[in-house]
Image (cartoon, rainbow, N blue to C red; front, top):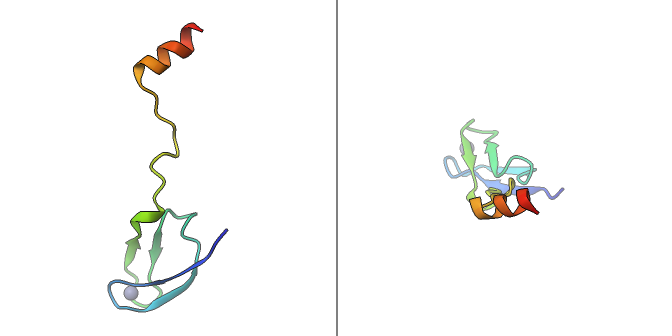
Length: 61
Ligand SMILES: [Zn+2]
């Protein structure tokens, strides 16, 4: 799992060795305690979504 160094947008402290993929980009700054989320680490497609037509196909096959 990759680790990242992130600069806190609130106080500009560099937070080192964060496992951002595991937390979907969320981290709590070690200096000011503010929680920040980095959007590019979000995983919106973690649960596959099917349209109603795709669900019907799977049911009747
Ligand atoms: Zn901070």
